[in-house]
Amino acid sequence: MISFTQAQQKIQEIASSKVLGAEKVSLEHAVFRILAEDIFVPFDVPTFDNAAMDGFAVYCTDLAAATSEFPISLPKAGIVAAKNYNKLPVLNRGTCLQVMTGAPVPIGTEAVIPVEDVLNAEKHIIYKSLPAIGAHIRLKGQDFSKGNCFLTRGTKISKAHIMVLATLGCAEVTVFKKPNVLFISTGAEIVDDMASPLNLGQIYNSNHHYARVLLEDWGCIYHHQPLREDKMASYVNMLQDSDKAGYDLVLSSGAVSAGAYDFVQEGLKKIGATILYHKIKLKPGKPNLFAVLPSGGLYFGLPGNPVSTAVGLHFLVGLAFTIITGQQRPPKFYARLTRHIEKKQPLHLILKGQYRQLQDGTMTVDILDGQESFMVHPFVNMNCWVFIDEQKRSLHKDEVVEFYPLSI
Image (cartoon, rainbow, N blue to C red; front, top):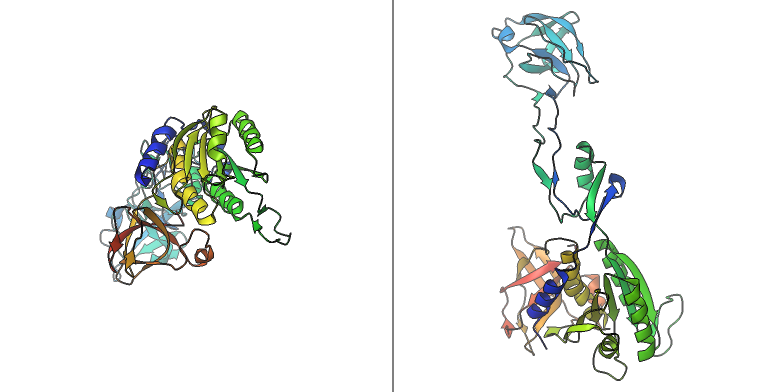
């Protein structure tokens, strides 16, 4: 067995040479895709100085003596609307121009005074105070400056990013291609049709459904192939077909341990795959396997127990996914344990947890009951995975531990 850290290092080493190619997609199809290059601001935003409010463009010097007791009247020389202009209008001294929100401020404008702060006498506007220079004017480049990098390679494009990209006229973006993933669920006991009642010894295929929603949320193209015969020949045939198809990632759940029907390791050897590790000092998920297929695709053999499959997906497959799509690894979070923990074996533990943020901003995390790898009832309330290093033998209440929210 190798350590959990060593397993992640092997994945990182191999996956780093498998980074996916890039493609251009339209803005309409860009949300949740992963940027394959930095994006720079193509022009200043705003592209021109403009009015922040409906009001009047003025020279401040024309209103230097204005007070509520001795107001100043300026003739209104026209209206500047928000529209296309071949050249900017000019503000002459001793006059004012009415401007609409978003309209270019006339040449010479020193301030815009909101309509509610003046007395509008149609042809003349009466001012009772001196505005500050620059008041209610949005300056060119105040939002974005041309040439600045605003989204970096590896960023997952969010719905909020669409607003920015559209503002900057980005009709298309360069993104990493979506990983093509095959999930093989093994086991004669697995039932795929959840409308079908279970017979003695059968279970529903929860691993497939969990893998599908997780991988599709990451942005993968998901394919599922059930293997309902616990036979080496059937598995080898499926492996050969999947290798020819050229999947970026091939995952399997079950048949990866040391039982009479655990054929994954031997089947991979038969097709000429290179096995990087088999068995990790990890609970749940000790019999995890990682290999490279003859075509170059990455293969993850995950244990069949549902929690073991989930852990392998998040922290082994997930690591490979972030690397081949150019992303940064998710950030670590830390919290204080709400109770004492004793470890029975020197293994790296990944536990179902529930974290909370207290009023003072500190974080606590509770290790939920039901940590066995077949127990999924904690998924009802869990919101994180908690890491306990293999070197630790016991942890006291209030000791700080590492955790990863499910939302990341």
